[in-house]
Length: 140
Image (cartoon, rainbow, N blue to C red):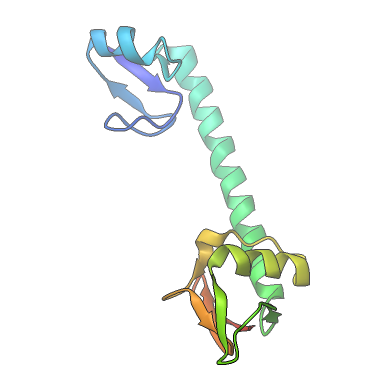
């Protein structure tokens, strides 16, 4: 049976893909969970329009993200945390905390997944972090 996937389905395909699956799999698993619909000519045309809109939306988001990174160029982020007398932090700093600090200090929303850290920051100091192949300074 030829179907259009309405969501990403593990071991089946990605959203808006047209796939051939067994009748039983489609009727008993995909259709009841509203994960797919039959690939009729009208639904294929509607799916192509939705796919194009989704690609345009992703491109706009990507462009906005790039502009945000450009405005962050050369910026410093200061994170204040408690340390012991040797300069070790009581709690490690992860990308989530760095993302929150960037949003508070520079009003730019950077997803934590985009922040590349070799390991969590555990000591007081100045560190360079990467956000999509660009380096920024974080001062703890």
